[in-house]
Image (cartoon, rainbow, N blue to C red; front, side, top):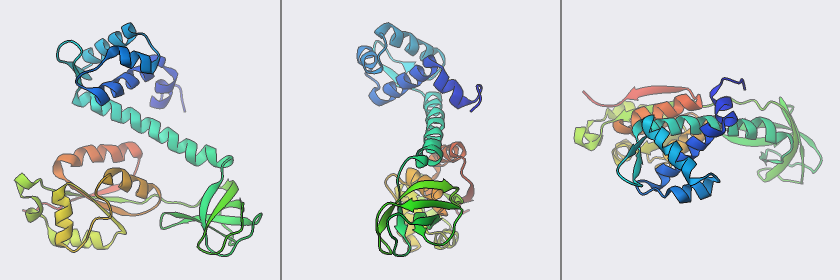
Length: 267
């Protein structure tokens, strides 16, 4: 982490992190924002909150609609999302590269194991497994386990062989532009049949999947679910309405995941 990268600037600057927190509080409570309550929650003075809000309005991140009424603008939302993705990436680094040095990981035993055994640890189909076969990452079993049971693995060493999954982003039109009736079904069926995880954003997307005989594995919270599945190495497809398409691509860019775009709108 260099001194001029976004994460360093965010964590080293108290004013920047406070501005981020205040913008989140405005988004959570808009349009009626109680500055004293925000000040109490963040541990700053009401005068400081007022000054930060003034700066956010001047920057175009917040729109003021009279006394005590504020709304986060589209640029403000994008600013919050970009910073949230930076923090999420940092948290992921802590979980994956730091905490495993001192924590107990949960894996699936791929054979009967005994407490104290040294095992190889690997990923398969998005799940962590432990067995006696030599692997690039090793750990020590913390309990007896039979094949298929969950088992604790401590003192993890090495690097778990892992490749992030690719996400196929399939754009479909909103209902006023034809919805599921205007989807290239053959192409959708081809994509859905070749990936283990399929998600839908929007009823148009869910109905389009249903029309090719595929029930989405995720609907509620599908954006986050697909990203998490891809981080665990699963190739995924997300069928998403066109008005949500661009924002989701930005999230994938921020997360650093590979993706392929498929426009399923029929001519």
